[in-house]
Length: 404
Image 1 (spheres, rainbow, N blue to C red):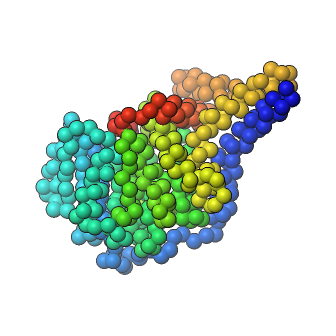
Image 2 (image 1 turned 30 degrees about the vertical axis):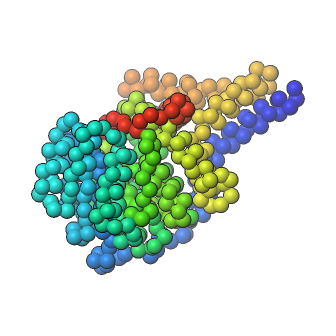
Image 3 (image 1 turned 120 degrees about the vertical axis):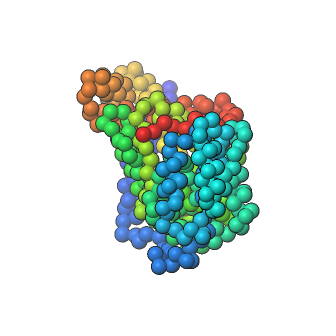
């Protein structure tokens, strides 16, 4: 019986240590390691634009007529040699004016190609086919990049140049952009989401600086060297992470450029973001299984980064559940310390999120309460994604997230 109680103590504090490491200790360690280190070299300078590689822009669109005109205008304004720029846009059996907009744009621009798909396939499958066509037409190698971007991501004029310049380094296989939100509001979760993603951007940037191993791009706009591109398997939900990890697996570098600015409308509704994170959560567990050798044992820098930044975050719901049950059993056994700890857990997990909902209905915004509710929503979505993964993922087709 004594062994049982010892195990409960270990589970309680081990679970807490895992959560604190991924959310607090690892960012502090990484910031320290990155402090004073220069950004990535070598790069192409602004005066060397004629030397820049060819870029095939790959874009999958499903019912994106509302944002496509602005997106396409932004591509025309890119500060990049137009003779080295190509667009491959695929419509995933859209039912709005997406096809007409893309077809008309391709008719006016010789560097653009429009592909109409007559059945829903999902973004990963569309990107795989567009990439295959681009590589067939322009070859695979350091002189040909694939820029994978979503229709709702608006690129600043210098975004593509700031990504492509890093591929002067023959070891760089992936470069991720810095996506900033617009349309933030006090109500809803957009500001809490922005604070979390801002932290993620810094972590990814530091990982690239320290190890050349950014653990996954954000997916809305990133560049991959064409000969490093690997098609995502059927039914894979998070193709951008898979593509980036395949680069690391092959010995290439993955980095983030804070100056490659893009913009995306903010998400405000909790239920919309919950569905998105549930899908991403299920895809995370797919990648966890496929790339186990890249994170276990976490004895090298990139493995330590993968384990600390991603694996522990993906299993945080399991750590919280395990730790809470262990604390509850110890509290029921009469341990006063664990009883107090159980009460504090209950306040943080249930009372404060409920209080945020009640205050919101009264028109009162308290950012710290919103942040706490967002944290638990995010982890609940991860847990739901794990259940989705266990049931078996049959399709990677989904509805785009509604944003500003």
